[in-house]
Length: 243
Image 1 (tube, rainbow, N blue to C red):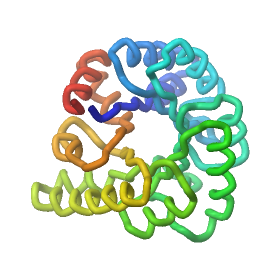
Image 2: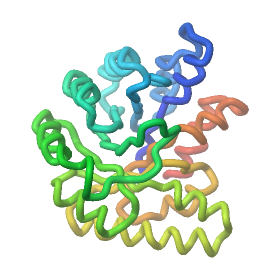
Image 3: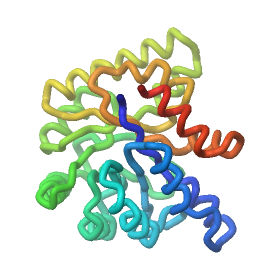
Image 4: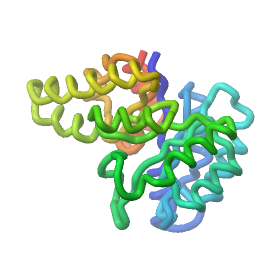
């Protein structure tokens, strides 16, 4: 079964739009745990527009009582994010390039400007017992770059696949074949394979067949549907797709 890590950022976005404590991020995490998800993902951004450092610590405290649920902190390797990861010690840290002012992630890592500290960060976090995943596009150059840094896994950026899926079956299959090639290359180089960004109940029907896929991280689509059918219901829908 492919592991489902639920990104709870959108719960914090809704809470922060009004202030106060509702809806509760911790209550959302509790529901996810009760429904049997494999992981919880957060992306604490520098502007704290959704998940805050306090949320990160509170979720870590809650998950300590649930040994089978992994905690994944994702974000760019800025000093305050790495300090937070050092303190919390999640099961996994997914390093994601961030463009100032972006609404959401737009692309994965490639060798070049802004990557000079990645090798040191990967090595340090692994030394703390944290699995390190690099967010990448499904391109051979990106896969080989992740392998050169001795990352444990890659997270394949799936927004291009989601757009292709929406365009129709032929485009979806062409895009999916790129991800298959990236996954096969990743596995051949000793990298585990995660995926995330704009995956939903529809496009997962195809994407779940990706070879070597260990984990998907899903937030926006899952929480959007939960507004209408309820979080427990939508979690069971996603878990059923990923069996």
